[in-house]
Length: 189
Image (tube, rainbow, N blue to C red; front, side, top):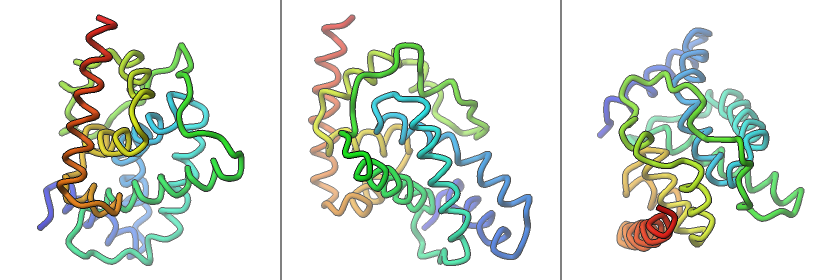
């Protein structure tokens, strides 16, 4: 069963597949921000790299929309999968680690979010730079699970499918990661 966000995206994808250029534009404007935020966290706050990876991911998404089939899952999970594989491919080419120190002046939330239902309360509550630095202390799996849940707004079921883990394993990763973040951020407060 689709959420309202999923229904909107499925509708936009259907319109784009039918040749509606305005639907492609609407997909990009509405879904660039969550994908960018996900990538930004995954690259450790390197803005230029996050922008490049997100753009590359959207090029791949748009080129392959004709292959998209609605299977009842949130299509945004597909977008995150494309972003994730784009990032992995890029890192393999450069043989870099996923997480490093955040660029001091960069913040993941200065990209405008045109979605009316975005959970801005969460973003306002975080001290962004400290939170991104604290995320660097998590395991890759914890960081992935937390990023997809809180920045990607995916359900536990969707994250489990994306990560190839059970729902219980995802919940445990999120719980451990959140406890570690709380402890780390408490020391910086």
